[in-house]
Image (tube, rainbow, N blue to C red; front, side, top):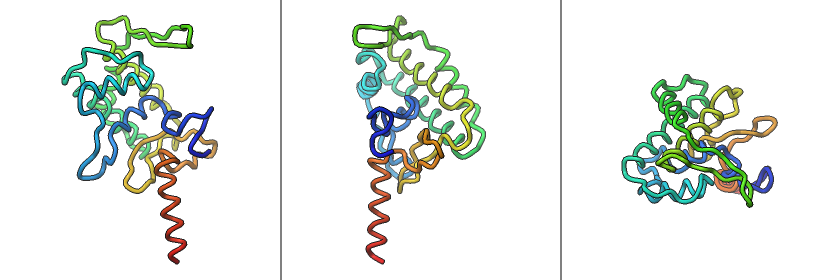
Length: 190
C-alpha cells in the first residue's frame, strides 16, 4: 500500500482516532517537541477536523490541559503495547475514566452519519469518544499490531493493519518516503 490505503484515505486518516490524536505532538524525542494543541481553539479545530461534530465552543485552558493529559496517556499506553510492556495503571485509569464520560451518540442524517452531543460540554464528550476509541484500539490487540514508527526522528505510534504486519512507518508519504530517499542516497554514494 502506498501513500493512500483503504478506500483512498491517507495513511494518517486510515489510523484509529486515538492514534491520530497522539500525532498532535511531533518530534517527541527531540529537545523541542512540536505540540499543535497550543490553545483551546487548536483543540476545537482538531476535534472538528476529526469528524467529532462542528467546532465546539466553550473550551478553556483547563480542558486543553486535560486533553493533553489524555493524549499523553494514550500515547504511553500505545508505546507500552508496541514494546510488549505492561501499560502504566495511571494511564489506563485516565483512559478508562474519560471513556466512561461518553454521552454522545451517532445518528443518520442526510449526508451520512454525524455525532450528537446532548451533554453540556460537546468538547468533553468528543474527548470521551477519543478515549473510547483508545479502549477499543488498545484493548486485546494481537502482538505486533501497534507499532512505533521506524522513521528517523519519529516515534509516532500507529496501527499496522497490513496482512503480514510488515509496515515500518507511521506514514508512507512522510517517514517512509524520507527513509527510502535516504537509502537511495546511501546506495548512490557507495
